[in-house]
Image (cartoon, rainbow, N blue to C red):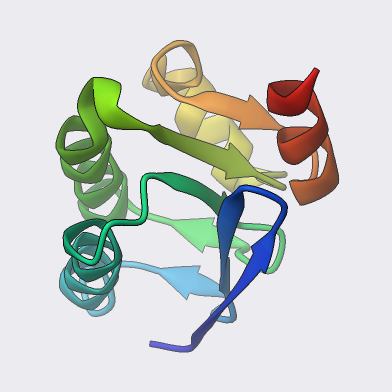
Length: 112
């Protein structure tokens, strides 16, 4: 799975560089972000702006990560659009996750 991380303000931004988030990448995604959490990172913005397809296994991995973060921090989904945004809406996960249109919107909304 291709992804990159960088710091923006108080957040670690995890930018997914894959067009597809499916069962073949969900375990690695979950492991990689869980490792960030284990290393003490508590404020994460997950940039899905490059993702054009996402299946239920990846959504399940994100739900698990949200539970890991709990009340200790933030996991914000940024840049979901098209089919990916529709999946969050259809499953009502858009009500569970904090979602923003962009990484900048995520970091500004929390800072305000």
